[in-house]
Image (cartoon, rainbow, N blue to C red; front, side, top):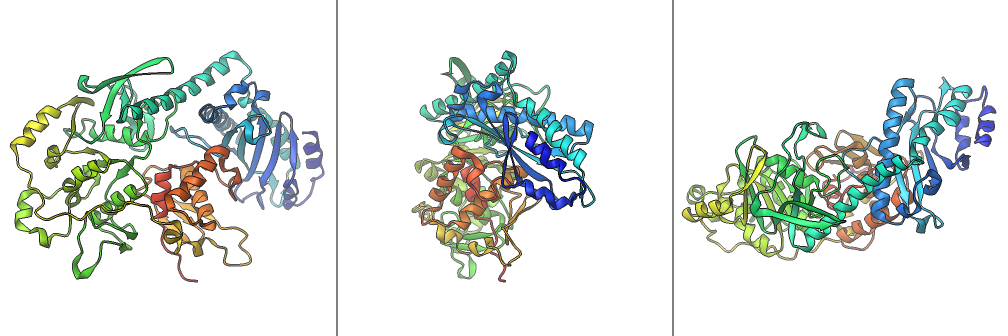
Length: 569
């Protein structure tokens, strides 16, 4: 730190641009090594990016915590929460120009704080921290006293929150680690027994509000119906709750009784949640996808024929192309693309779906004959999807036709689930569900399309076009993501996405599109995904440029398919 202090003292009266001389070197920072990854051009530009590294043992963290990917992920999440809370408090009190990513309720791979394993760090697990720092300046001149205080006193104080020197601190961190270990073991046990999802007794499903992901205070804890009660013994704990079997599950009930709340908890639990969230031990098929209508979305060559026969005026649905899909065709595309990219569980909410995609009742079948109706409702394909190994969980309030095909029926009452499968089967048996009169189109080969074919019209948009462009920019405007010259509206795919998730998505797709491989698209995504899981974002160009979180593989694939072709230069 002495060398950095001396260097900063030489900046007295010098131009702000001299800060850039701090890059390209690793500075000793006590127990940490520090690098200036990016230095802003002036005091009003976006903040500089500083990276700090230290072996975990120096920070009082047991070495064995660095040997397991699950332990490292939980430890990174815990340390970031400690650091960001301290930065937030100090920044508010002291008006500090420092920002650390504030994590949401999910436990995700992040570049803001990464714990790297011994194998890629010379035999020692390492903590890697990213901070955004506004370097002090007075107009175009470096403010040396403020810079010295910020870089050699304030930031070292903040980094002290990463030390776990006391038994109490280590015990608290261990609770977070053990919570994630239980969750991962529980997921494995649930899958081994052939269930789609599991909700433990005592889980808190409702959220604080529609704009907050925090647990609702005084919410009714979840209690499994006895017919679906299962107990799993993992990590020395016995955990009881509701196990959802494979097949077709209906969640019914009156309005505002918790149907969509249960579905939302299941959907969101394809990724882990932090200790205390209330959903930390809810688990579901990691390949699960939320299916909804998405009118206006672009569709590029997706085969929607299993749900939409040939459209009027000879429009083929074998390779469906549109820049603005309808509600039903967009939902058909969403289902077929989810299957193409390996999803084995589909979550569907009646409220978010196109009615004519979900059902077609007997009266309408009589009025409009099969030959004059291109749409084939999901209810007609449910049994065949089940035979293909695809599970569905549907929230239904009005579409009673699904009772005929349901394997399990839950009815929510005051946020409590009741197994009403037997009653539903009696009701379904007493009513008629008209079968399709014609042979339905086959689902065919669900093999994923090759990446070169899916990316062909996008690669030109992720290249620099002028000598002044040093790198392709990733820009966000709400849920609209722009990479270079290509843009996607992701509001339906990521309705509550955090900026860091969209930034991570942008970094991921930029790297893929600049390094197109001759692989099926799902394999190309998986290859890069595993690399980031193993070594973080560090090997990606611009991997430290923005605070970033790693989305799921299915979400990355879905986003790729929504990017608009670049305009012709």
